Image 1 (cartoon, rainbow, N blue to C red):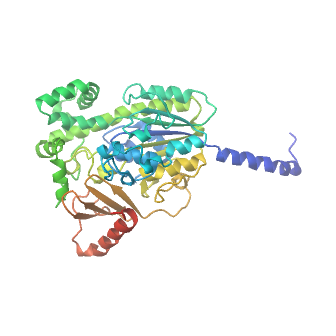
Image 2 (cartoon, rainbow, N blue to C red; image 1 turned 90 degrees about the horizontal axis):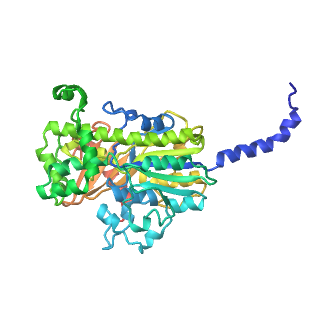
Image 3 (cartoon, rainbow, N blue to C red; image 1 turned 90 degrees about the vertical axis):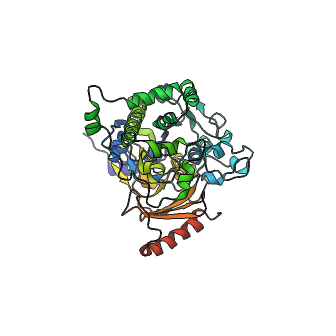
Length: 473
């Protein structure tokens, strides 16, 4: 065999370098999979033995999984607004001029608001040459309607045909790279358990008439395994009560006020009246609904692998918020306990992101997603300067990272520090503050606000709250 001469190799070097650079800078296809109401702990790869999520685990095992990924606000619409704009929901105001803190305010952001015209994620990616594809749940204000933003909308059905329609689109050959948002609804249907259980007769009839699919899936999730007695089920199959089942010691008054606020009094009903067995059934159904949505994720992954596009596609999996799932005798979300605000975040790009990584740094799904995807698209984005591109973390680069992170909510705001300190300032029942040490008390069973040993920590995190994360307050 005749080997090339050294001079021939040297002559080829510029071409080889150029080809290498082209390979490294070619923008990938991007698939963003967003589930609804899934806590960070709700994956097998997160260490949960009470459910099986092979599709979600595949993304984590073939890429990176973050253990401290937080939403900007633990309800649907505000969190989704953040994902598309890279800004806190409170950056926007509703039609009455109030800061956006909940679903109603988020859906009421006027399209004429100057801030609404700022560049957003699909705008950046479209300018970078991406074809935009969207399917499933929207729950977005008018200025972020996917069709108006230039997306091809596959379907509004977030439970049935979405996964297959998205899979068909993945298999298609296209000239341009694509950015696809697959917005799956579950395990959100767990919401209907307490809503139905504490509905009066007339409202129950409305639920049964208007939410047949949701209730049917919930009922399926509540079924016991075939051939297993009830006694055996609770002894060997059903998840136990969480370690933080009881309300936090000296819990903020704002939480009780929020629970009893109409028309959401079912929250108070669940806390007051659910038996321990009912709470465990809630946890069982939540796990089954998560497995149902994992099967939809598998359909997407099968299409990606079979189409041969896995090596040039960045897949990001996350959720818009979590669920309290029995912690502190709470279901639903809204409050800023960890189960509500911490969500799965995994990313996979075969050959570019090393497999099996577990990252424990503080990341914000709402603030960091836009700069991350813009970096991969090769078009830097101008948004909230506190947001950071996760690309260096994905690719294992050594980079100086944030030491704290802010979170907004309907009744409170919070700052979480890298060292495990967490500060929540409530405002729904007057000024209340709670300082937690997640290192010694990861389940937030109590607080150390008045502990003299934490005086310096409290003063320091108050300063970060007021000067870095929420200076406008």
